[in-house]
Image 1 (tube, rainbow, N blue to C red):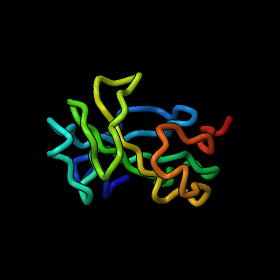
Image 2: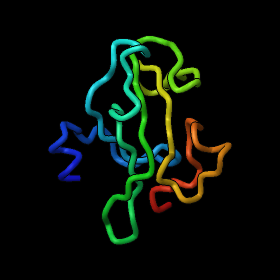
Image 3: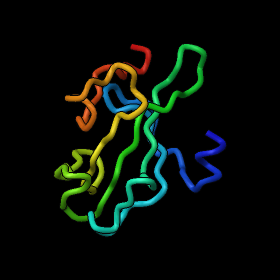
Length: 109
């Protein structure tokens, strides 16, 4: 978490089942302003030892659009359009990589 915080990320949520724990850096004004190597959100899951494990990233835009060939999805929680990428989730298959929710995140429940 120290590295994420040093890079400008701030924890914005507790663990939510299927969503994880979010650390936000910024929200892009448009899909065109998103950068693949600079995600806006880091998504973690709690570990049994009380820590957090990085599972994926989100790209967040204030306006709709496409990014990496995928349509940004309107969030039901925040006023942004999002693309999730579960790149460090060992259970994610090719069809799961860009899904909005991750059923493997249980928050210990």
